[in-house]
Image 1 (cartoon, rainbow, N blue to C red):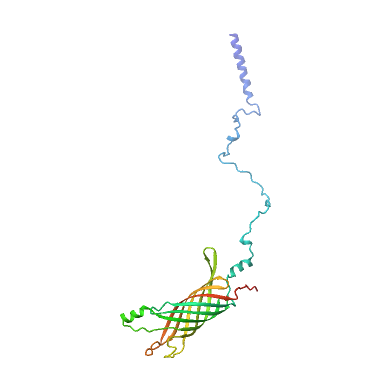
Image 2 (spheres, rainbow, N blue to C red; image 1 turned 120 degrees about the vertical axis):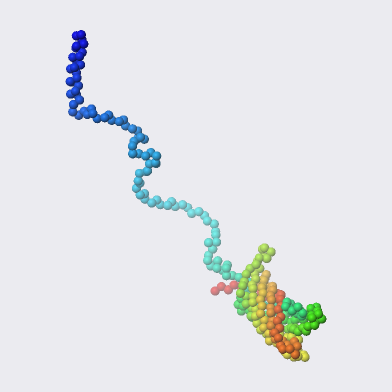
Length: 280
């Protein structure tokens, strides 16, 4: 019993000593304990789902472009001088200026089904410019009756006016407004031009001599065609020419305008045989 009493007395003495210990200044035993530090990945206010923005950088000074050695470039059309380009466009493969032209011509009428006309002659021209020439043309014709004349007189009891032409002498102006080049057989280049011609002159018909003796008839002509120049001194020609003149085949009937359309084929020869470009 005595021992129990001693333990109780010691316990009672310890209680008052513990209470003052709570009032020791500088120690706050009522504050909650501090939470342990979290790792950086769990700190609040940081959104780890978005990539972190890099810190702002100061404006860097512009870098100079690195000089590299120039690469070799092949020759191209841009390197050609402008003068050479213009000459290549302006030059023509055939020139006629100040050259004389002599052309044998063969013709056949294409608009008379009753009286066929075949002609042959020549044209002498002087080229004042490369696109204009003055020409004198002479042609002689042979007239032939076709079978249509006999059939027309027998079947239709009709009277046909025979409009023949024996000779013609014309002065023409020849204008060549279009010039070009054409490929022949895929490798040869042939120069050509298109021309127009018109003029006036005289025509001799069966009424020009005896017994009518009406003399030559004033006439005019116009037409056109194409010429090919395979050589510097030669050209081939294809054309169509219309000749109009007044004639009176039958004395009892008034004079009428006669029209002869003839297809022409010719070969031209130029002199001088060569030509040179003139440079200012």
